[in-house]
Image (cartoon, rainbow, N blue to C red; front, side, top):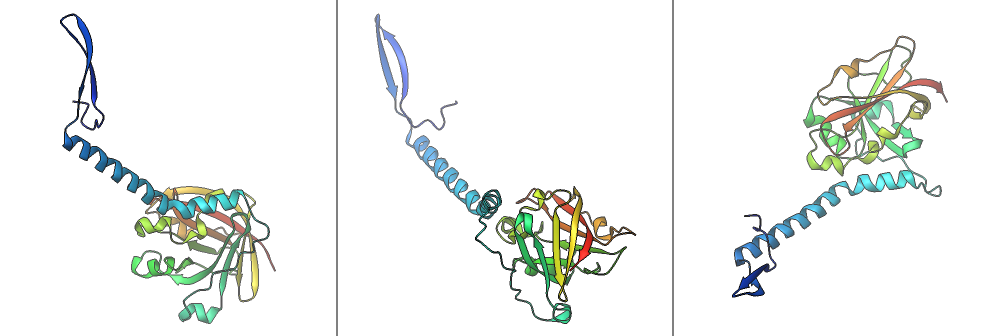
Length: 235
């Protein structure tokens, strides 16, 4: 019963009239077909998984083996209207994890029909209703990339926050808006449920805080990873 996928002849030792011998039983054709078909499906499945997670693997390899001769350039946004145009470009830069992206302002974080087309263009989204850099103490900026609604594409699209989990306390985050650069320093990191929305309301009276969000673990939609950083200076 355990030889269902056996495709090699089954070897059996026998003793006939006092003489020992070996008998080989060839497996049925259907067993051979099922074995090779299952092997083919397994091989295709492994290639598919590799294809999905290749961007994550490449990002991690680049992080572990940085090339100082490569200069990252901010992503050029395909959007040019509404609040984004009125407020000029909003850029995000996290040197430690080589994350450089344009940020699309005022995106509905609870409406997939609005935020999915934004995230599919490999940019970071700024949650509508939260503040912008330079708003001052007691204000909070909420930025997100990747979504539980992006399906398998979440592991291939929007690579900006692939390495967000590598950030630790005191790592720096830079934002640029209206020709001013704001520097933030990481002070906390936590994993929350995939439906958590309370974090968008996080505030500290004595500091301006930026919160970065991505799905966690990367390539899944199980939970959310949040990184918190306080503004330290303006350039």
